[in-house]
Amino acid sequence: MGINKESDVSANLQIGPTTLGMVRIYIEADGVDLPLDFEPEEAEDIAEELRAAAERARAMTMKK
Image 1 (tube, rainbow, N blue to C red):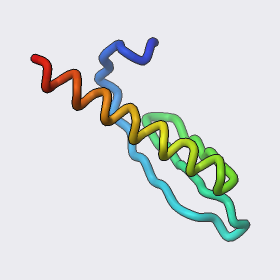
Image 2: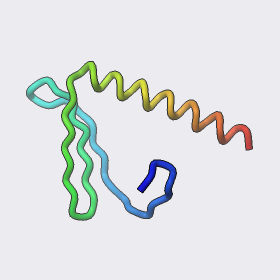
Image 3: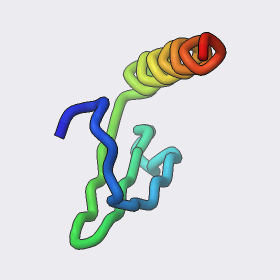
Image 4: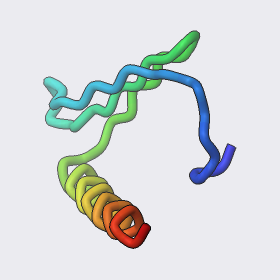
């Protein structure tokens, strides 16, 4: 599945700090439990990528 392909799969997403000082992104879907741990600096990089993608997506919808 590519990033631009629609899907009808639903999932729960949780984001928060761990007791070990990591940032955890936890994804839960049908039959999937996926904890992803990141150093705080990595999490900040991911947050910047999310913001940039949101800006690009917003710009695409405004052009229509």
